[in-house]
Length: 529
Image (cartoon, rainbow, N blue to C red; front, side, top):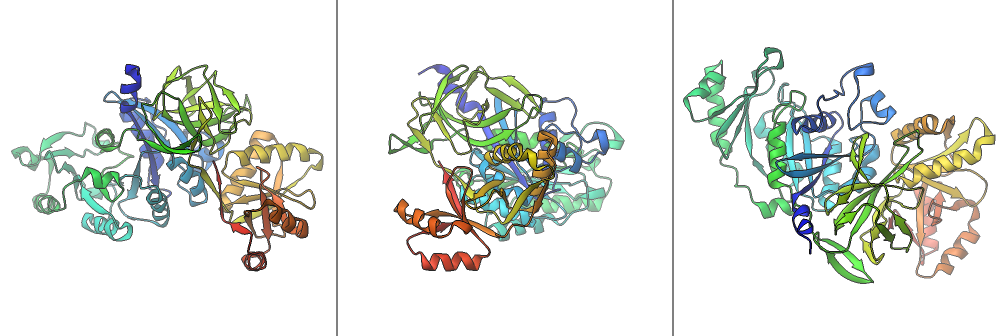
């Protein structure tokens, strides 16, 4: 075994950032990159017009609306460790994309707004993390604005998420009274300096004589000293409990003011697990793939089309799970398709560089023309299959209509390409030539319309079809499905993988069809392994 194969995976940290929209996730992402020295200026999402440019939001609609609607990957180094940051969409309409991204993460940072605490989308994304037992570090953001009582926020995390909570820091008030945070383990107090006052955030000991100089109010100092003493009564941090997803350490700061961000990166360096063994099947046998295993293996958790409009590219994001990848290698899918990886990409939002080597924990981009899909496993032997990544049944169905019917073939190609990214779904009814798009929320449809216009030059409208819901069909005997489809040509179709689908007018119709056809399973999820 090469020395690099033993050492390099241990240097990797792969984490995702999850939050409710507007909790400050993208700003935190930017300033983590800035604090680690990966960029020299952070683009503020709150800016207007040309000024609104962030490294992680590269899509036109993201820059116009100031939201993240696509997962992106950014790599940076800190303390001799290599961090792969997976930035996820905050909007609930894109929670499926977030779910897929979390399959590639070893840890998640949950960002909370100090004034709002746990919001509905935070709760949804947390449940996604819980499905995978992902360790969660909590970052309470926007301390420079008026916020809720710290004890209240911690109690809410305990009650709503059923987690053990360990504050690793404690803040001195919030908003105009905000003075900084203390590290409860080292007793170091990081003093907050308002940006308009200039100067650096300085560190002092909370139990030293100089702490008084950081406060202009004796009552506030007394209140803070009492609170931080009470905070030490919370249970000690337990690494095993954290790694199993039962305990969350809590940090505080202001991403916009770049306060507490470096301390959060230090926490990730210390707490985020290095790449772990991954369950898989090899030649039909259940195995655990070790990060330092010899065979190169990984899985595709995301496909992004047209990141570079000039080249009409399609990039598959591969999470490396084992082996030492070298540029130019040939890898095989579980279906025995061979993919020659001549130009593997290391991501930095829009910026890219060629990856000569990659190890477990790295995320590399593989340019391809439709050969790779979300959920594909890649390995040298082609015999390794990782657990599948599911598609979820859409909650909204829309019929795609073109203003210029002569461009129908172009539209089909555009819809298929975007559906292969896995963010939206495409269904082809067995009767007629309609193309039905499935989505979790209406914003996905807006994004799709915008992208088809920007990336393919097509004006498309989306209308309500005669169907309201879609279910995948499965049965032990394929003949059972064929007989059902032959009898129900008007209400069946196929998805982009040619898998059979039942297109129903209502959930009542699904129940009725299920009752009449007990040998058929009407599925709300479909796994592509």
